[in-house]
Length: 173
Image (cartoon, rainbow, N blue to C red):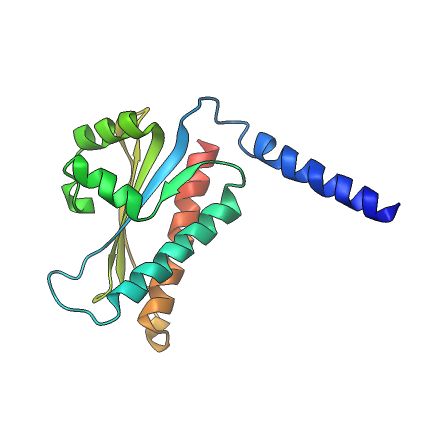
């Protein structure tokens, strides 16, 4: 009897959570597309593939934690699609190119993250297709006292915190 009640509650939560998690998003577009660029300024950085994979996992974790049941596109597919619109780096992004991408891919927001591992900084640009403008455009540096952390720890902490704040801002509108 208890097992049936627990299973019924779990099934209800699985069915209901996607329906109620984004009541504020009324259209059938995906909420956001997130692109991660790693800018080494042409220098060789050992372990760049591992850094890319680890930071993409941080992005997926934050997205899954904040957006249960909502569609958020991220990863290498977003990078490939943005290149078709002449956006090879976050610095190359123009409002016209991002508008064309947003219309073609049916996304409301495009978040461009440019990680600079050599100086441990993160550039964040969030573009709204509805407003046809950037809603976030800033550079964040690692906080003081982080010298004891590895580059991966510092960058994943920066990325996780800033991505969560941008995504929360998007949710609240």
